[in-house]
Length: 314
Image 1 (cartoon, rainbow, N blue to C red):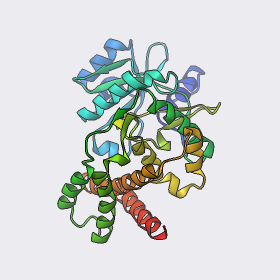
Image 2 (image 1 turned 60 degrees about the vertical axis):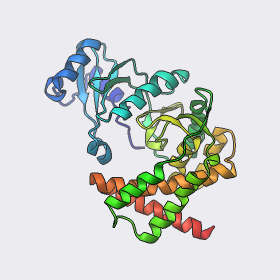
Image 3 (image 1 turned 180 degrees about the vertical axis):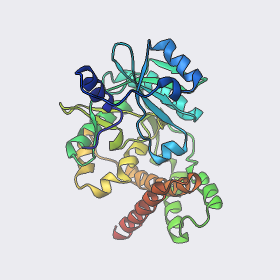
Image 4 (image 1 turned 90 degrees about the horizontal axis):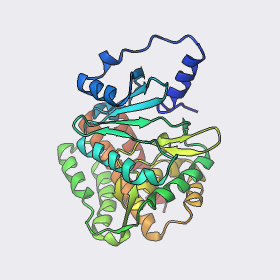
């Protein structure tokens, strides 16, 4: 199973404590911007920089950075620097308002600094899920059911506006998607604009609920990280994050997730999930072009073809 950078710090600290030979520690003063370093030292006595895990191309393109730290007691921390103001606000809100309802199942975030758009998170045990274990999908369904219930649902009154954003992106990148595929996906997205009753409620949503954000420990306990896309969303947004890839390619993943979640999707939710999957495919393609992230473009095109094929088969 591929290790998660959010969990690797525990192994490194254990090796250092046990006296294993390790590479020289990176210089925290040469790595962190002076204002960030000053803030970290004000809340963590004598911090050490353990490592800076590699970021995805999309995260790097957006300027997000995560550093692994250790305090003077050897406790593991993650320093996250998020240059997108709204993403920083969303994540801080999720940790302060919703994650507290699920103690031990997410990192804790005891420190955050608005002006620097930074936060310090506790490390949690576990390795990133490969996504291939059906039991992980079942446990993820149970986790998401509790997260969606972290506060009472609210009535969803605002119309879906994601389609208009796609239209603007299409104007900037007119050749990124073939006309027929764009019209197919845009037509599916238009369903959400015409029929708001498909998504009548808003609940606390993760926003990027996929296996790379699930950490599973040796006892099988599943925890979830990275709330930068969280917010009050229709639950179908989180369902669509899985339907977009894993429910297509891993037999049994959807059934396992729904067993953990505790119910089947309604017909209206199925329609909304398909529409949101089409939205995500176009978004990946256009956003990949905007930021020059080719894996995002390839993923969006691959998923869009699969969605077109599934509609024809249906």
